[in-house]
Image 1 (cartoon, helix red, strand yellow):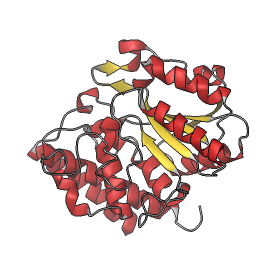
Image 2 (cartoon, helix red, strand yellow):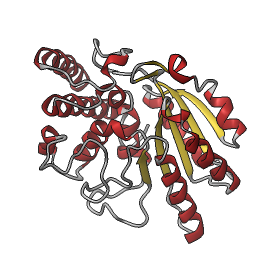
Image 3 (cartoon, helix red, strand yellow):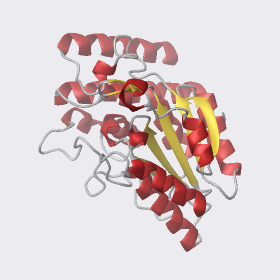
Length: 280
């Protein structure tokens, strides 16, 4: 990695995780597990991978990101605040009635949010439309969308994927966050989407498989996607739900539950210790 180092990105990912815990604790609701699992993606994309300008959130030439798994908004808000789209002072206002930071991303009120999302399965269609618009306009921006592995049980995901491949949208990158857990169990127990890489390949995607909590692998995959011509790319990443907080890791009970005071104290202590270790 150049310009910004892997260590610096690790610091940012940890700060995003701290924001997830801060926000969900004060909201007394939210989705910490799947937010923590994508913090590394967001750190890489917003600080290195995407061509963006926080001072001009609506810049037409910017790369776009659609958080199709919109319930992971606490992580996106952490990234946007730390990147300078709005004040980090807003993080504790998550889900408050007078706050712009609602339970799911809102493009009308939150600077840096490229698409409102949260109805699972629909975000990828919006991303496909954006990628097609870029092709029709002769623009060179890229579009990224992050999906949950439970989310891809939605049929609309595959309709959009079929269309993306049919139109040769090589400016589209679909990231599947395969943490193997959803609201009430493993994805196999609920409705197995496996094998995920083979499914996207069958729909005409170039497929890359990585560890999605490894920044080097995230960077390599995103760079590889930029070399692919004539077809969209799917990055299927294995991640740990609740990554970074010991008692949340690999526990589906933390899909949609906020930490209480004692749990908040432990989580913040663990993440703060990690931050100090990285910055030391």
